[in-house]
Length: 147
Image 1 (cartoon, rainbow, N blue to C red):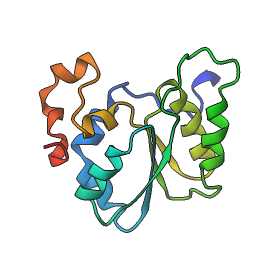
Image 2 (tube, one colour):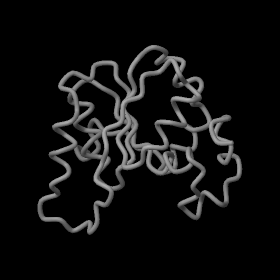
Image 3 (cartoon, rainbow, N blue to C red):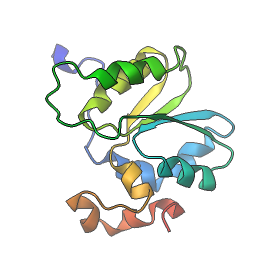
Image 4 (tube, one colour):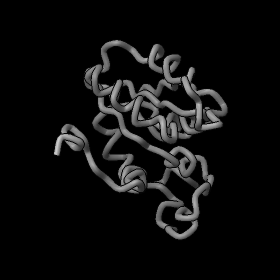
């Protein structure tokens, strides 16, 4: 089926596994840049405190992307223009709700690895924003990042 060509199919909760393995993930990016696309400043502070040898750069999203019924989502182009043209070897963690798929595709087209980190950013700063967060206690510590 062509609909799934070049697609990765994973659980909507794959960020739980990423949170549990941040040490391993960021050891591969020691001294390298990792981009964060989200609408919160605190996750980058938490990550920088825990992983000072990684260069975290945040591309800020608008504070609110509601309603989700835009005919022309103006913020997509603004974020797309903020992405470097060459992202070869760059990891980009994205927390952008339904718009993350667009950003992941653009990152991939520019040679990077785009990961829909979703509400993993919320968990990094200790916010349980989804019902599943209250059910899964193991993520509350997120490999030592969340105190």
